[in-house]
Amino acid sequence: MDILLTVLLTALLAAPLGLLIARLYAAPASRLTSGLLRLCGVNAALGMNWRQYSVALLGTNAVLAAAAYLVLVTQGALPLNPDHIGAMRWDTALHTAASFITNTNQQHYSGQSGLSYFSQLVAIVTLQFVTPAAGMAALFAVLRGLRGEVNVGNYYLDVTRALGALLPASLLLAVLLTSQGVPSTWSGAKSATLLQPQRVEGQLLTTQTIPVGPVAAMVAIKQLGTNGGGWYGPNSSTPLENPTPLSNLASMVSLILFPVSLVIASGVFLNRRRFSAALLGVMTVTSAALITGVVLAERQPNAALLGHAARGGNMEGKEVRLGTDATALWASLTTQTSNGSVSGMHDSLNPLGGLVPQLGMFLNDVYGGIGVGMINMLVFVILTVFIAGLMVGRTPELFGRKIEVREIKLASLLILLQPALVLGFTALTLAVPSLSGTSNPGFHGLSQVLYEYNSAYANNGSGFEGLGDNTPWWNVTCAAVLILARFLPILAPLAIAGLLATKKAAPETSGTLRVDTPVFAGMLLGVMVLLQLLNFAPALVLGPVAEQLSLTRAAATTPAASTAATTPATTPAAPTPAAVPTTHSAPLTGAAR
Image (cartoon, rainbow, N blue to C red):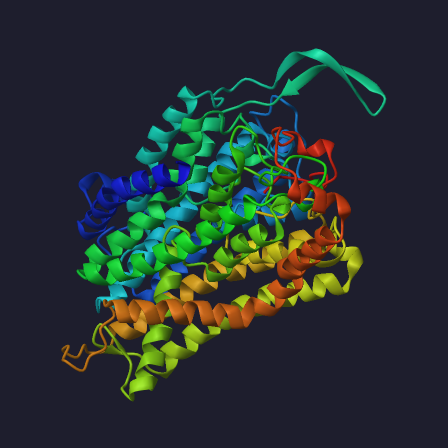
């Protein structure tokens, strides 16, 4: 039911939103927008070529990242800090600034105890609005280049247009979440008396401190902006961010709404609706395969519980109120986009269940992040056109413009950048065990490290927690991956679009390769899958595949497991997985993402 409702609501909302966004970017700047930009010293009527657009994008992002870093390292002396949270350590602040300026929101800290209200709102939430807006702006700049326009737009105007779409949507979602019980207050943490005192490490506890704050506003843009960074460490698995079935459904729809809408908007903006329909079809088929894979994997029992409980799905690391299917659906959707928010612990997924989020991030274009997901798909379109042209002996063309050496070099370098960074840093970290901080030896430890760098490159932010990642090594290396993986995949397509815009478009003939047909869509899907399998299949075999095989073998040789496999279930599965041995659970360090 969760899957069906999510798909139906997304389909109903994405089409009108996509049309609205396309019209927003096609229309001239309003007087209000022009006036606001003029106050900031920007002439909205002044266009930019791709180089000027790139400089504007990089410059504004550099200034915002530096400002966020300063806020984080001085938050102890700043206002709106009722819980008296101190300054963030330099390397954690560096990673946090890099993470949020890249729309990743990878958190090596726990939000409710690591940031003041001032830092959450001024540094974090500001970037959660601006960075998806920058991605959307970059997409429409690339689309203008593909239309043959050397003037690819005005960066500042494009960002303002994106904010015009994100702000109202976030306001509506924040009101809905507040109505469902998500905190929305400026007061400090609350104290509650426990119904039953608990003894922790020899100390008797009778009260519990519950951090609150303006949470609903952050959660709204967290979901809609493919950000994912939560107010609380456990993210959307905690009832304080995701309290009801309605909030869960709204959050899942929100995390893919804008990425899907931008595919539709691209077709309208290019006046090539069949082309965008073909791309949306490829994304949807891939999405359905990934969702099916993780849902089926999580319906299988946890290997550690065989012989100890009735047969049932893997409930380790999941909220009982959500169950396996809803948690698996969220895990798949959040890694198909660059959102990265979680409603359960990905580290506790069954091995093959954990493989699916990795695949979604390796592809990085199944809807993807706001703007950048569609840009990544266009890079694969260019590579597919080039391969198809070689197969039939024709000069490859896209929308009538020849794809030549410079364009293919840029696209190819982008494809190679991902394995170079992800696999390179994974190998280096595993080569020095003291740096890795893994909580599990063997196959799962490799998966933890691979996932962290994969998540950083995909600007996703989710993680296999239990990993001790709040160290100078992890913070600095992930920051490097975050910056390179955000801006190079934006700048290179901008350059490609700028180069194509200068070429004369040839009229389409019967011999022109059509990029809006089912045949091309099938070839595009094949190129995507084959390229990424060639890049990452060995690492996946050494990680989740090997772990699954080892667990299967262990289960087959355990008498208790054999008995459980032949005994019908008569009682519900244990709802508290922490009370039984688990395959790879570990204490959380930092945020659950």
